[in-house]
Image 1 (cartoon, rainbow, N blue to C red):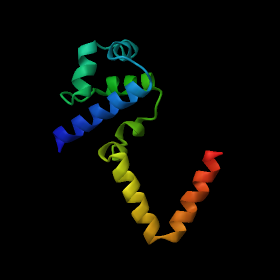
Image 2 (cartoon, rainbow, N blue to C red; image 1 turned 180 degrees about the vertical axis):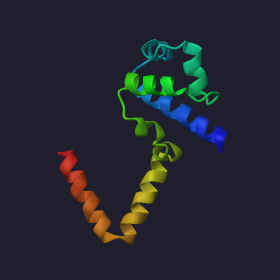
Image 3 (cartoon, rainbow, N blue to C red; image 1 turned 45 degrees about the vertical axis):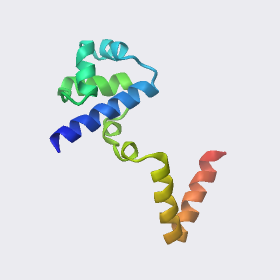
Length: 107
């Protein structure tokens, strides 16, 4: 489990870094660590220290909990759709609620 958590955390950091358009070099500069350390963290070889963790959160401009949002990473878009459709088929109230949320944010 320990290795799996390191890999998931590393993948999540890489995912957020890429979405922010940052290179490993730029992120390392912002966190004030060496570039290879970012690589080691992203590849699941090391856990970040507390200071590095705080630096990553600040540099990526995210809440700490966002680094542990692994659920969306583990499933493909098709798997997510299938899970949602199955849930909607079982629960009409859920379908209507999600539809209301969708309409509220899609406008």
